[in-house]
Amino acid sequence: KFPLEAWNAIRAAEAADLQKAAAQAFRRDIEVHIRDIAEKYLIQGETQDTAFMFVPSESVFAEIHENFEPVVQKAHRARVVIVSPSLLMLSIQVIQAILKDARMREQAHLIQGEVIRLMEDVARVDERVRRLQTHFGQAARDIDDILVSTTKVTKRGQKIEALEFAEGEPEPPRGPAKVEAGARVADSKTGQLRLRVVEGDD
Image (cartoon, rainbow, N blue to C red; front, side, top):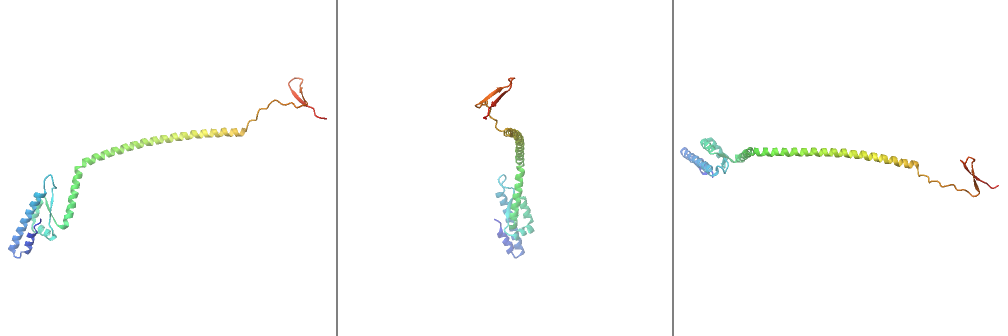
């Protein structure tokens, strides 16, 4: 706990000697407080390297830095940072940023390894995509060849169909000629020509 009673004693002292005695007591109490913080909250291997000593008033904070500079230097050597209400959150944010940066540096080799493995995965994906693109190109060429063949077959079928319709139905074969009643067949003298003679009614 911050020795606020000693500070109040300085403010309450009217005589110079009383103020001097109160100031010495205040400095002694602050030094004890700094030592206690360093011993209790700065443990090597378990805690962080820096601790905060919170001063609950901006005026007290300004008084310490103005009139008790040796105390501020002693706190600095003990890795204890004296902060006021307005500086507490800012100091915490700065410490967090420093710690985050330190962790990033410690894990830089791990991050680098992950990036290398990530790039290897990307290279494999690129190779497989290119291989798949080649297969797609070959499939497209095969489809084009099939379409060309089907087009040729279709055209030949259309030509055959057109020929059948142009010629029409074939005529049935003719049988032997019928000889009508009363008709007689006349042979030529040479025996090469046969004529049918039909006698009409007179």
